[in-house]
Image (cartoon, rainbow, N blue to C red; front, side, top):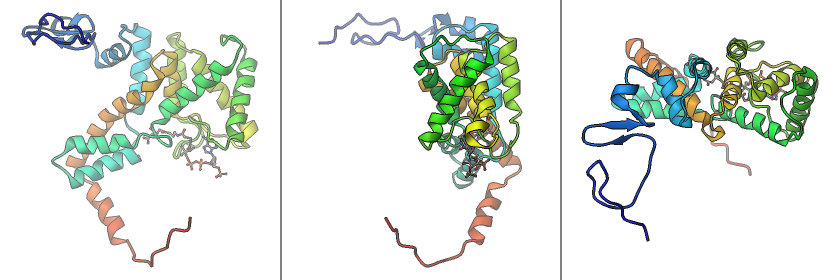
Length: 279
Ligand SMILES: CC(C)(COP(=O)(O)OP(=O)(O)OC[C@H]1O[C@@H](n2cnc3c(N)ncnc32)[C@H](O)[C@@H]1OP(=O)(O)O)[C@@H](O)C(=O)NCCC(=O)NCCSC(=O)C[C@@](O)(CC(=O)O)C(=O)O
């Protein structure tokens, strides 16, 4: 049986107890993360810092904020990606539903685009967890050996390596070296980023081609090195992309293109006989 507690400070009835370190309100105050929201947070804490703080319930230092906000900037927008096009097309059909357009765009953050931030963080973390030696090597050779084995196993399982390849940046994704440099400057070049860099060096030996380390992947490695919960890494990519999608919708209002995309496909469609499913 649930123990009943006295009426809480917010004036609600006595009942079950639901402790939270997140937002809690009384008729006069709002407490967030142990802070007075109005006095200590509003106008005092950047949104990026708050997002980190909310996810970890610990206040990040300035280096962590810089790397985290660089990740958010990196993933905010990358042009007419599937997420952006989906949001614009949904907005064309439901201009009364900004939330629908944003949600539709965000739903596309998956294993091919954008959601790879989390997939890559998980992949790197799994490789590190399986390696029984300490993961604080200074020499590249040890990282390269670990990476080589990981890429080989991924290849043997017929799986793509998350964080490798890009539809536009065929040689270098410019976000990647910048994030490595920022993490190094801030003393945040941890095992996930080191392993990711090693994958960049060794994968041609296994795959027989050189692919770029992409922005979504390096962001996942950086977020994992910051100690953010692996299960939530897609959430940070989506947080960043939400800002980008708001920009896409704002531009759609000023300079629409979704109607043209729709008409271009619709007016070029052609009826063909059905092709029965052959299981
Ligand atoms: C990204 C892409 C679909 C590109 O495809 P593409 O078809 O253009 O790749 P190609 O270069 O033609 O591949 C040539 C040959 O290499 C093989 N090959 C390719 N990748 C390989 C790999 N990882 N492991 C082994 N083999 C590989 C491939 O199988 C082919 O082999 P073959 O058929 O024999 O010729 C592909 O790499 C891929 O799935 N990567 C893994 C998932 C990943 O990391 N996604 C993140 C993408 S970034 C992102 O999410 C950020 C965002 O985009 C977000 C947004 O906003 O949406 C933004 O920028 O912000």
